[in-house]
Length: 176
Ligand SMILES: CC(C)(COP(=O)(O)OP(=O)(O)OC[C@H]1O[C@@H](n2cnc3c(N)ncnc32)[C@H](O)[C@@H]1OP(=O)(O)O)[C@@H](O)C(=O)NCCC(=O)NCCS
Image (cartoon, rainbow, N blue to C red):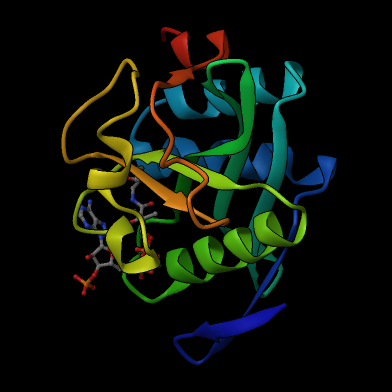
């Protein structure tokens, strides 16, 4: 998977265990602290990290995105849903399309692997360009509300039933 990257080749590929130290450093740098890297580790430990991609430029990991299995229920029915979080691009390489490449590749893989929906808590100016909508997430009973809490259906109608509930795993509760 290759994409544009300001004159250099940026390759998007699935994460390998040997990438993990570089991914940790990248998250620490992008978020300015260790919390998100800790969430990444907890999600892996809980075996919930089902899609994890890195953006590699000239051998360096410059971007990372993780999609984890999320419990979304409509009564007895469980909707195969992912949480998009965290994602990070190296400061200095931001605003050059790398994050968008990661989101688009991740959503394509999610669709291919038959996930039905994706939920994100993030910048309200960023995620709508990929089709995420706060209006779609709003009816779900969840620990979050508001314009930063957004959803995207990979299968039309996946989240449109009544009584939807989102339960985040403890991996997201980690404190610094
Ligand atoms: C958010 C992030 C992953 C985006 O990656 P990126 O490679 O910079 O994104 P792209 O180049 O594909 O898109 C750039 C767009 O992202 C948006 N964007 C980037 N950072 C943003 C921020 N902090 N708040 C709102 N929008 C932001 C801008 O709208 C920008 O568009 P513009 O250049 O037209 O202004 C990256 O900026 C980052 O790592 N930020 C720090 C960590 C973070 O906040 N992660 C996301 C948690 S939800």
